[in-house]
Length: 431
Image (cartoon, rainbow, N blue to C red; front, side, top):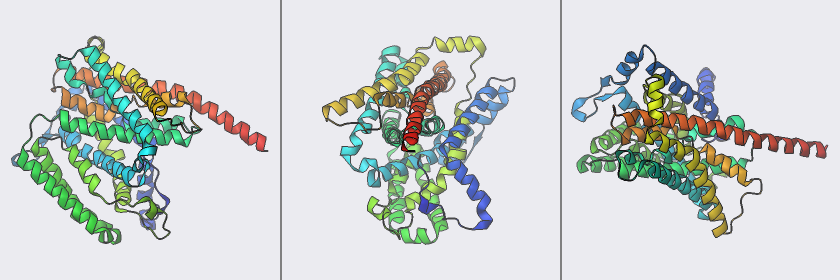
């Protein structure tokens, strides 16, 4: 989500590890993460609809784990519950950093993207319910079109928006972070069927212990980063397992663990002798694992939907779930984000950044219609595997995300060309 701070570039200065450093730095680039995400999803979709589809589903449904701990899960479930927890851990870190040292620390500066995010969640949900109806089984998927995929959206912006104002990127990042926070709350509140209080309480206690150790052992972990892995990683896994056993989606543990990691205050960043905070070190270490492995593997196991040829795709097109998801993501997101931004700027008498235009905000709204990762997760939580809505919901997310990416590329690509010409004109006038 963010570029690597300069003070992090020399954390691993050993020349013998130069190649591994180069690879992890590549994985940190949003464009590479987005490309891997799309590639793994495409491979899964093609494989699941090929003559060798049975082998794909055999791999996805293969179970492994320790049954007494309720951890004998399919590889697909391990990806959704386990690997995606790494992604949500980074979301927790990002949220913590935004609240402590980022744009969200000041309500007056964060109010516009926060309200925009709320509009971008509410309008797609309302449009979805208006399509499928309130009292139908399809209505259980109302939250599917509410999520924005940060990695995918920022990757598209990085590819097509080389000359777009930096304020637009900040707006998208803040919007996407708040969107994730809302999505996490939705999953925790609305998609938890039953809760076992004992494992939940033990999970919260374990997370508290994790946080206390992280807060009180900063110097140790700064001096010996390997100690953080040896001490915090096992405790984090125990917290995740207990959260999973409680019935609450285990990815919530990742967010809570991320929130416990200490973050340097903005003033500390200006100190010349200030080293990287533990949150920055963890983000530096975990982001390649998330972007290069966890999220692509999740996409691989989630995007493999047997469409059933032309007839199956035609059947999906007539499903209200698909129609509601596509309308919610492709239309609801830009309408909700743009309208909410307009309202809050008028009510609070706030001016947009001078470098931005309303067409730019609308373009980011279209880009936010890429729902991929979290939307696929909510499909799995909304409908039972094997139901038509389960498959059609995933087809809907894939279709809507591709359509939103294409439309955003057109709108923001034209804007990027305009900004580039303006920069060239300004440069020529200076000469």
